[in-house]
Length: 219
Image (cartoon, rainbow, N blue to C red):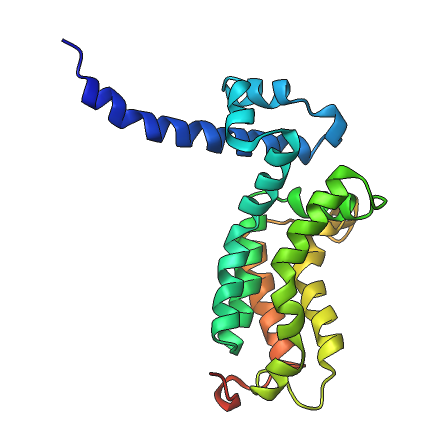
């Protein structure tokens, strides 16, 4: 007689794997192809999953695209929550560490963000991505301002508005450089290179707009 309980117990994990495969396949395709060229059938075929599962889990291709964005950026959201809860230098620096760690897994993803956000308003990709980015970055827009100055993380003689630009530039620029330019300057976005770069960026920030770690008044 078939062990029904064993079969049932296996279904949730199989469903989770199907959902994850769809998200991974969608990310792989959306980062190299135009949105309107990526069909749900193509995503499902690449994932090895029944196409009906896209509607079941995500409702539509747009729903899958939005979920892919949110889940790719979820580790950053978790680190942002830590930074909001405790605004200190460590959590600010760790946000950059997490970004590097996650984006090296999907180095085309930051380029997708930049390309889509350059599209005209009203484009479905732009609207979905703008909503996701607004949800993610709204807390840090306030955080990288007077709050970090008041808590002794950013030096009081520095403009927090411009510090925000410097911080974001250090974080995202390596992933937006065209491969041909990386080649000219003999840069290669490997794990070891990014580990060196993040430590270098930390030293730049410490010598620039961050207060010495032992002197900040973090809470």
